[in-house]
Length: 332
Ligand code: AMP
Image (cartoon, rainbow, N blue to C red; front, side, top):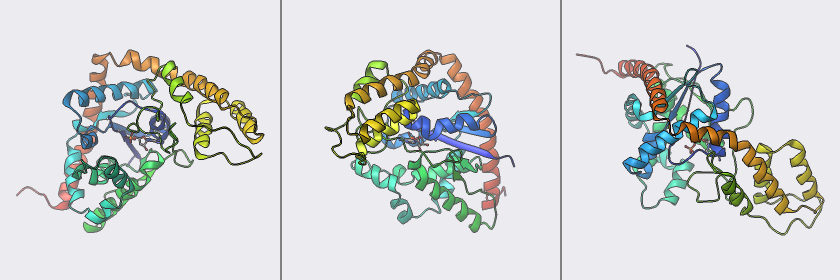
């Protein structure tokens, strides 16, 4: 069987730099050489209860952003998760063998439960089983994701192993997180809180759709202090975050210039942020322009979604047929 790759993104907001470097960038390289499936995780987004208008609008927007980033529907299968309902059947099978204790221990569940205490629904709890279904519905072996998804992927391996063991088969592979031979990526946010994320409030994330003024405003507002007082000291987390973002979008000599200035205690954070904003805008501008032109092209977007749906369903239907047979759902 050819190596299959699966990854997805929830349409709960625009794509940001974390999505790009954690997932999309790897995918752009992988689509050249592997059998790739990349989906918009709209079932997953129901955990936050979007309105019908928001749900459809967000799905279209994210699809346009995928294409603007360089995802090619003729090379990879790009589809909307809810166009492949077979995923839900596999989700049900995995849920029957997923235990409350192990689901409650997942860090992303604990985080979400803390962030939305009035809406700790079963979908949040079973996020890892739906993610396992997303990946294993195509029997994928590699998953390009950011570091935040490491534990969920461990759960996918657990469910795959459990199924194989229960039915005495080697049907499902045990998929691994993938990042071109390097460590998994974690892009920090601008508010000093750690991870860049869609739902962290204005100022944390740089979106691929942000215009020049917005980028500048967000970066200039990032937390700094009055500067180091001891030579060669270690920067605090929020300054390291700025350096991490600079590493991503600026030239090597620019990063070196400001790192040396920090080590010598003569860094001017205002200048550093201005430079970062300029480099960030230069990095994002070409993608932003493409997003703007593609997102109004409804005909193109629905053609791409249909093309993806047909291929994804074929692959998913085969898996469900075989899984039903293994479990014992046979016609009588
Ligand atoms: P999400 O936006 O949570 O649906 O995540 C979609 C993909 O983007 C997953 O593969 C995540 O691992 C990745 N991702 C999201 N935020 C970050 C981040 N700050 N750094 C690295 N990867 C990220």
